[in-house]
Length: 61
View (tube, rainbow, N blue to C red):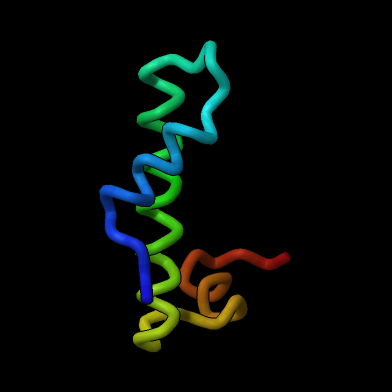
C-alpha cells in the first residue's frame, strides 16, 4: 500500500536537517514531484529512447 502525500511530506520534513530553509523544503518537494512524474511517464510508456532524443535535438554525441 502506498503512502499518502501527507505522510510522505511529513517524512520529507523529518529528513531535512534542522537548519533547512523554506527553499530547501520546496526543492525537496519539487524533486520528489518530478521523479514521480517521470516514473509515471515511464510506466505509461511515454518515454523516448536515448537515440531518439539525440535525433530530435540534432545531437551528434
